[in-house]
Image 1 (spheres, rainbow, N blue to C red):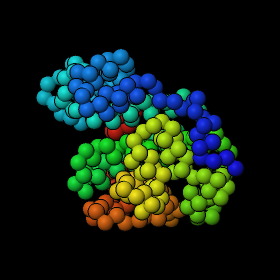
Image 2 (spheres, rainbow, N blue to C red):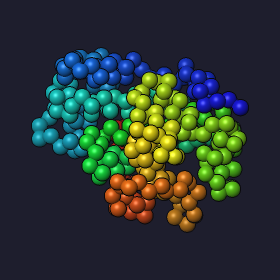
Image 3 (tube, rainbow, N blue to C red):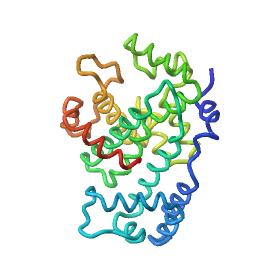
Length: 276
């Protein structure tokens, strides 16, 4: 059976992040960089620039006056927020050409955005600064399945069917039948993209956050956001066959799967604009 690393490598020429992602990250990680340095890099990509202006002028930010320049947009929302926007956008663009008869990609992205929103909400509710950074970790939570359905679609689908029939956790069935689960494959993809280590660890250890070491909090938030997103995706008449909920001590009491469904779907629909 192929390893997670081999599965990712088999798709490496298909799922490569564009140059703009790496340029933006280099600027953000350089402590000597200025807002104007970031604005100059963004101007290289007209599509990213247009999306940034559209988002900063949306009701989400609610600025009283129209923002019409990239430099002003960057100064208003900050480097990290711009970096997260570019990351989310380039990930969506990277997989935009993917086609598969066995996977509902629209449903996949809706659920991924919901998970991203929940991760950011949980982090904010726990009093974590820069909670928006957890949006990207939540967005990437299930990205391993995009690799599985591209590299070995029939096996990936068979694992899903078997898990549903047996009422077993999907990751356990994938480990037994494929040799790697979606969390492991997703983490290997993130590692190949040279993303921050906390992101890789959050995805790799989302099913067992206590194994994430110094990044246990990141993995715990992704785990909880994933459980909530899975719960929202369930038919209310059917019992849950998703990963069991592992309580996180710092999670606020209102973040319970039963409290999610009344507002999750409209929130997800409005937030899909971050990827479109």
